Image (tube, rainbow, N blue to C red):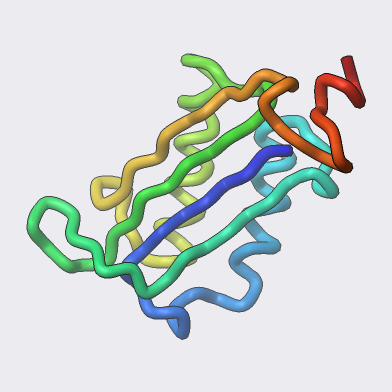
Length: 119
């Protein structure tokens, strides 16, 4: 159910092969969710400018059912910004992350919603 999506102006060949797997693991631990439900997507080669500069930058969104909130988001932001900086070379002042806490009825899975599955 958690989904971390990052769009970046980095070319595909600058995204490490194991980046998605690393983020899935970190995301699952940070949110306290099973890895089997975590999704990470990277959209490289985006025509993007941050503050008028085309230096490496990105825009990201973390959607989850629960596990988000003012204090939790500070923890998630720290972990995700550090990982992106270390793995992709995008500094924390060249990216935004939006946090999106979705109710169970707004996320579909297996032909229904998480609300129907988990109540």
